[in-house]
Length: 245
Image 1 (cartoon, rainbow, N blue to C red):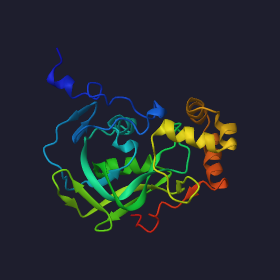
Image 2: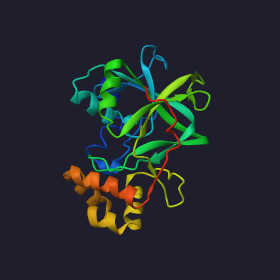
Image 3: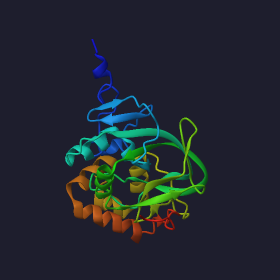
């Protein structure tokens, strides 16, 4: 018999696998509903807003409870993280123009005034915010000011100002200068390898080879990041004008 406690574990909810361990699963499994990430559990939330914490829109693996759990545990941060579903207008989910040391090509927001996406807002206390900032060396945390960007919680409440992590290498495009949407890791790496012989020479011909070689060699990840720029695969996210705190 499954206890009430067991029903809230990440394993029981199908949320236990982190992209840092399984790169082709990136951005990882996201929760079906809002919750409070506390250790290995995702507990019910008693409220959607959390004064004293910073609201950050997650477009990639920061919306994966398993990935967040890894980050917090590695730094011995034990406090819980509220994760709240939201409708976000003004950004879409693009593909970062860098190869992650964990073996994937991560997501980054791009400006998209007519687009509304269902994403998560993670509410971080000062210690958690400093930690997550430190785990994002390829990103700048920027302010998403209202009304240019609208973040509406699941109860319809708008947030006046939120933050997001924007990749400072830019984002990838398909050849037309328009940021490509991140289609999921396997599909994205397959498309990139098909489009670039130089990338295949570096990382192999399959997503599995790409991930394995990237995870084994930090210098190769840097070379891959440079190659994106050299092959003119990079464009602006349209968010460079935003304020970096």
